[in-house]
Image (cartoon, rainbow, N blue to C red; front, side, top):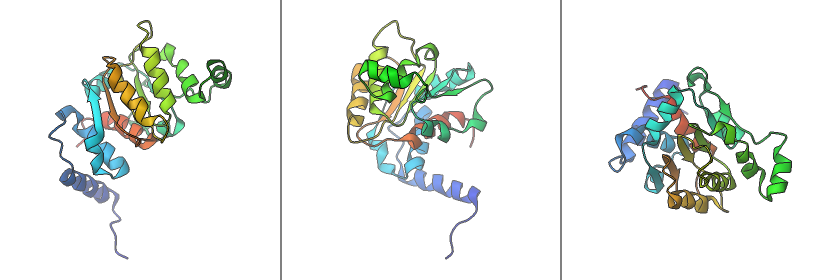
Length: 209
């Protein structure tokens, strides 16, 4: 069977196809690369109609990276998908899900390990980029933390929890709370680690053609 084999050409053709199918007119120019990479990550152009955002999430994220802020993720799969060779010097990706304190903390808080792991973000949260691509409870817990004015505030939130239980609700909660923190999210059940990583990668690749 004849098929396209050249990686550079596959990449070029992929984004050309996306450009033909996606209408970016409803998005600010600063979001265009993020939107295109989100579509590329799951090959579903229709998700553009389900995206919601607040503030200059791309600009806030780029500034945070330039200042050496951490990227905090809810799952190791999100971490795995981020282009580490593109990270500015000194920028770290953090995931606390496997911290030894998490199981006991989850039990004491009567919540999931994913939500309990968010508690461990507090010392690193100020000015950070948060990327959630798995657990709705992680997003719920983060929002509840941020309602406390004493809680450190991240520079931007990429909110892509996925699933049948709580995913749509957690993202609606983020929109409803209007935390005055730049974010982008995909409403409804769809989401996942690939989307969260793709959003971060779009910022890391800013400046590339």
